[in-house]
Length: 91
Image (cartoon, rainbow, N blue to C red):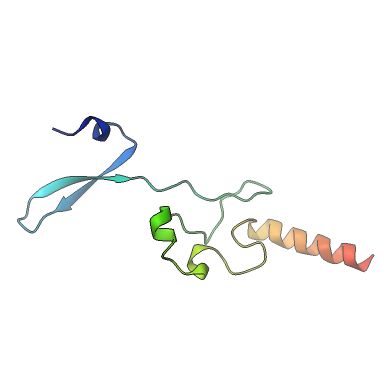
């Protein structure tokens, strides 16, 4: 019988096969939601979606794209802002 805290669906149910060939239920925390662009709200590609204890062990390039505004703006909005900045510099 599962504990009270394990009955809620906040925890993911994962079936694991033990060395004794028994299927056992493990309860794991769910992944966080996907990162969104701060400008248009679109989902960001190339941004890791892991729990903090796993993200801390990742290299910087695995966590987010290595480009200006990487992990903050989507590629479309990044292109727009860079073009706007260049236009402002010219005038």
